[in-house]
Image 1 (cartoon, protein in one colour):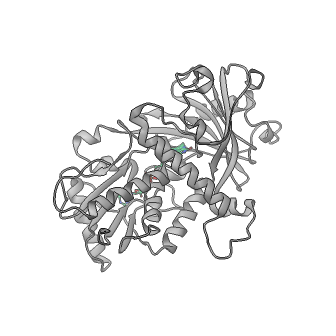
Image 2 (cartoon, rainbow, N blue to C red):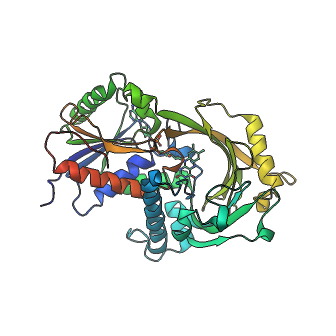
Image 3 (spheres, rainbow, N blue to C red):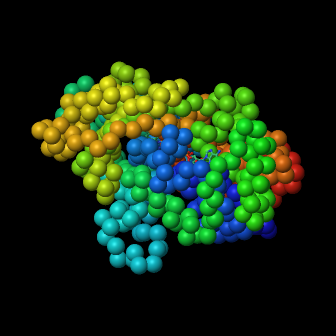
Length: 393
Ligand SMILES: Cc1cc2nc3c(=O)[nH]c(=O)nc-3n(C[C@H](O)[C@H](O)[C@H](O)COP(=O)(O)OP(=O)(O)OC[C@H]3O[C@@H](n4cnc5c(N)ncnc54)[C@H](O)[C@@H]3O)c2cc1C
């Protein structure tokens, strides 16, 4: 027998909260009600709201190690669902005859050829990239020949990736979620009194809106989860600072160079599909929470991408340079041990099951669909459960 429908409140409207809301609302037996509470929504920008700052594209960071099994499954599932969405649309009335370009613009996703290059070999690149688990997941995977590798590059591959026009995709997800009947409350809940305090304040917020207490709360608050986690868990959560430069013109392909000798810097070019702009990056500075743009780093980003010929088609501005539109900083929600996707271990909190889903680091978009389906499975289990201890996925 299917579990009874539940009343669910999701905390957070980043990609994790939005995708979770959509996955639950469109499930064959959806919850009786879904409410999303968030301080920041698509269209807002703030340092504590990571999603708008993402690059972003599908470039899996999961390794072939057993510890990354879930991350691999989530990334693979998201890739497949996105490709399907772009190929066949989402069933929105009136969009049946849209062209590929129109669909990319409307949704904010697009398939682009992606080149990944390595400055030194890693365990995954040896033996012609045999260790790259995703080679059989993506379309068009090819190992580049030596002639196709630039100076200082020892290995490279190309494949069809999905690139994201992040602001547009977040808006698109938000529109879809609202169309599915998800209620949105744009407010801040108190985090100063731990998880129990959050649950109590959420109940107060819902009551103010004339709503009942939820059966389940989903914690999709990204890095802010550390504000109300217990001490041990707080120690697991770290901002991973990223800085990007938005330039005019849309690069023809996505390109990334890693392992070129600097531990916390990478070089990437990601076209923001359908927007006439491109994101250039970047860095992964663990533990750094400086919100200010580092001008010298922006210079390094631009110089590398120009000198390494990663986006020559954009060099027509300002006499051979890039036309810079903006520079920005965002903080990936890093978590030791990977994403926390599980029921709060001690049973109900204030009479409510809490399902955590945060700590996606640099993979929140590319893991989003698979991870949200994981949350759906956890909730199914919770629905059939009485009082007792929570469990991991
Ligand atoms: C420079 C950069 C490049 C990246 N590139 C990629 C990429 O190419 N591919 C990829 O997959 N990922 C990428 N990422 C990672 C991705 O952006 C994150 O993993 C993802 O955005 C995390 O989303 P989230 O929904 O978990 O958290 P967030 O987006 O931070 O959302 C948290 C939500 O919780 C709400 N909230 C928190 N506290 C409260 C409170 N007290 N009251 C009310 N609401 C609250 C916030 O308002 C917000 O709505 C990148 C990140 C950065 C910074």
